[in-house]
Length: 82
Image 1 (tube, rainbow, N blue to C red):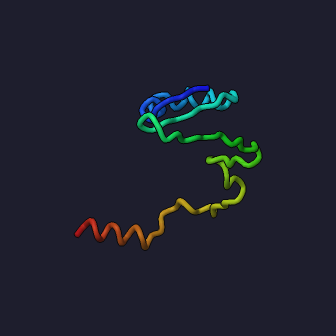
Image 2 (cartoon, rainbow, N blue to C red):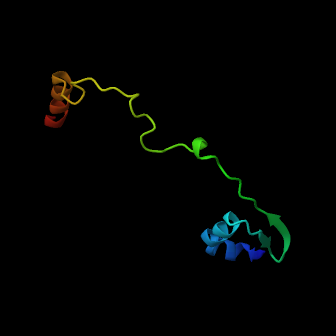
């Protein structure tokens, strides 16, 4: 069992999480009392969402999406000229 105060927990969070993942009991105290219990809840690998590539194959760009529109370009040019 590992007991840490809040400051120690902030400083060593990764180590405490590693210990908890190994099945060790980790207790974090506040001001020497008022014990708070944290438990790691495993997430099934299939429930994890990938951040990048989540929309792969779902977004389609038109072939000319990056070509400049003459009217818009002219409007910007007029604005810059003054």
